[in-house]
Amino acid sequence: RRPLLDVAGGSGIYAAAMVASHPTLTATVFEQCPVDALCRAEIEAQGLSDRITVQSGDMFQQAWPAADVILLSNVLHDWDWPEMQDLVHKAVATLPTNGLLIIHDAFINETKTGPLAVAEYSSLLMNITQGKCYSTAEYTTVLQNAGCTVGPYKDTIGDRGFLTATKIG
Figure 1: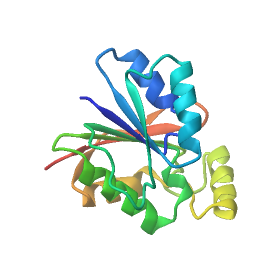
Figure 2 (figure 1 turned 180 degrees about the vertical axis):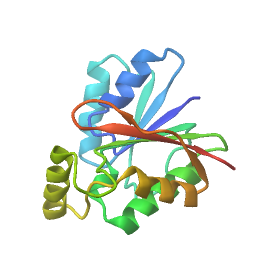
Figure 3 (figure 1 turned 120 degrees about the vertical axis):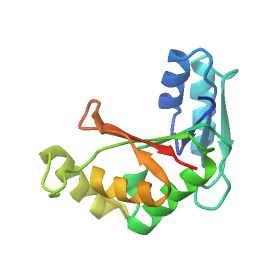
């Protein structure tokens, strides 16, 4: 699958890592001003400007660039339930049939009690953002309602993990 869209991709580090690991992959980082300029500089410093573009915009207000894979990394936890659902639905609407959505984030357990570091982080998020950490069950419900099949959860590092979903039709 290609291309990749990294929504609210910050410095572009995840897009850069994925493109560097997959020679045929191209990517777009969709980021708002002024972070977009910082992202462009980082992509250029990595020598990946020929394979990664940066598009400026507001993820809530503007259409997203077309992509076969969409990455939402450390994005959804900043938003309350309605906004989180809107972003997931927008991602799925942007994907073609069989397109892949990757949610990379801190996932709280089903009882909302841990792991401890994630529960603490979620408490912090509730004080400094509109969001919190969501469970795999919460994401699965939203993804299935948006027309996706959901893959298994996988741990990464730093109390993070990822969940994938494939658009059905």
